[in-house]
Length: 263
Ligand SMILES: Cc1cc2nc3c(=O)[nH]c(=O)nc-3n(C[C@H](O)[C@H](O)[C@H](O)COP(=O)(O)O)c2cc1C
Image (cartoon, rainbow, N blue to C red):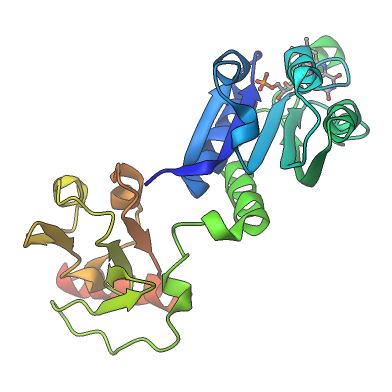
């Protein structure tokens, strides 16, 4: 079920800053994320889209990435570029990789960059620049970037957004939907039954006992209790769970639990 049309390649030699972005993006679109050495074992031409990223070292992406692209055959393929860098501005840092890709017939459909902690050269005077970067917010922006760039692979919202009208939510009884022959259960906490294998990880992990197993599949029977902590979504190996809370839900659930706790 994994997305085998997109591949993300990263080379992150300093502090794994760029790897953090790469894995966040790969998680979002459910694709494989590999290093250059691992990519050499794959047939790159077999993918529809390939993302290339690394830290910026001496004004460019890592030489391994650029050499790798230089070895590719000329063919049409979509690609995207990402990086982390110490300088506050990306400047011309992507130019060398972009040039290498376009020379090989690849179309660069998007680019993403953010700052990363830099403990080199003059930054050392201040104990390093961009401390704590890339942070959670940077990873979120990277995820947003890839979702927008490749909406067709965004499994979290792919189906639920197609639902025009949602049913009223009844306590303890999640709504079932069928979209493009995919069975979705629940409105605020949605389980994709085509993906769910009933392994029970969500039941084990959810601190609020939102889920139950019925007929070998997980049902979000108490979705109204969900605090949107995302533990279930992040621990589901089958990428079967998506959360769909609104600002209203975030407040509603706080009031609900406050009442329950008698506070
Ligand atoms: C050897 C070296 C050279 C660097 N050169 C640059 C540079 O030219 N421009 C820049 O903005 N940052 C530069 N940096 C900072 C890195 O791009 C930044 O820390 C990046 O987040 C590292 O990513 P990584 O952890 O994925 O390797 C350099 C870092 C190192 C270690």
